Image (cartoon, rainbow, N blue to C red; front, side, top):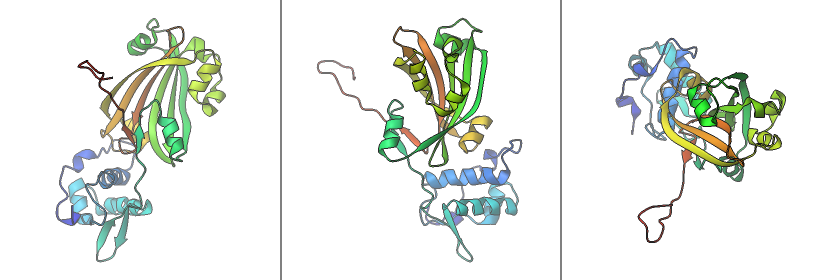
Length: 263
């Protein structure tokens, strides 16, 4: 878009949710940030004016102004009296490309550090899906832990893990806060040697959107993975939600000679 001021496009008002705890100005910021980072508003282009954005989002001009100021504070735009709000590249965040299996090693090779925050941990009965994945009786006790991983201070993934209580009882919550879970499983004699996973797209729930700092209902990459131990018994189920502007799944395939399939 050469001069975003002429055509805002889309139903922006439908992307906001006044019932969420996230302030409306920040929701406007998230929508505009997503369009900047996806290239809809390109570097050097001018965003629509405050009045036009206010009409499109069906919010007050003050709300829009706060959103634009937040974009400027994060180096996504610069604001100029008489020239408008100009998109910059200063706020572009790194895109990580790789497989989930090599994600952490890929981040390290890029020199990008992550930090993990433990949001919730509790013992609870397994629902039908968790019980089936972990090969437990429905209602069997599992440890459910919710973690938020950040990359360079920005939310990257929202992870929910389920571990059979007989395994989770071998490490403490304090260890869970400071030590990678796969390492804890190995120490507990339940190291994973095999994994099965499912990858799909999903809409960010209010909880996921708040933690990943994306608009509610926006698309996120969702993976479900079951980790299997050496004895063939599942040791962990993980459900992860990833910001698509921060992670791109990548894999290579090779055709087997003399067959119609691909490896």
